[in-house]
View (cartoon, rainbow, N blue to C red):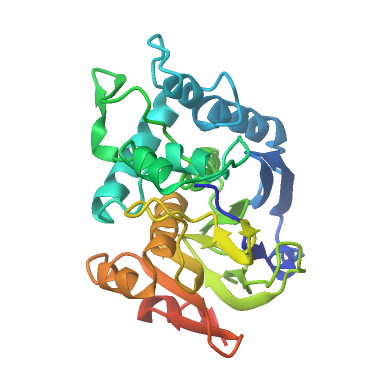
Length: 333
């Protein structure tokens, strides 16, 4: 399920480091996974990791990108029996399955057939009937795929994997481990709005991140709804307001309810999740957006390490927000 880019890193996080220290501020930017990436880190050795970062993205895309015709996930979806999942794929699979189980399947990485049917994947949408929805819905069930002896086994060959709701967060975490392995522990990584911030900036100032205010239309300008302080945590946002289509005056969100097979119809516009890693935050914010506020809050009672911030459409054409107690602690007034 492709998420929109709803987290904006504020300009203030790019502030220069204290001139009295020898540590150097470095910035890396580029495109990967169909979106942008922006990395800021502080290094006493003034190193440039642009080549290594780009190479890691290429490796990751080769594993989990649906836009790469030769990637492992594409070949698995095409039932290539010679595919041997790599470390990236296996870790994506294991975490995605865990989140699927914890959310009663509202997050389901086998949602590919429905994404394809509704035209939010690589192919354009055609006419959709209730019979077609029910037929594709039978193929969506994370319990019908297995990792056995290092190979993926599907109960039905028409089952299609889709890691789009977790892959960007996972790539953020993988890059974080890379920087830590180089002895760098003051950094922030942003891949299409999925973020991990390590420690603080030199001087002890926390990283400052903005949560985007939902827009009315896809191409509306971006503005900040809420600013948060981020330290040694992952943050991810899913929203329904920049990826949709309209038909006969009705708006269809790209967020699909796997219980019904149809795009969600509730008024929740955006969910931001705070967690110990970007990949965990990424997966749960997708699930919460599908579940709606009430079901999400019930589930959060069982997830003590996860906090969330919800933005919903109100009857007065404005916004209603709700933050869990833990999320309130990082909000800047």
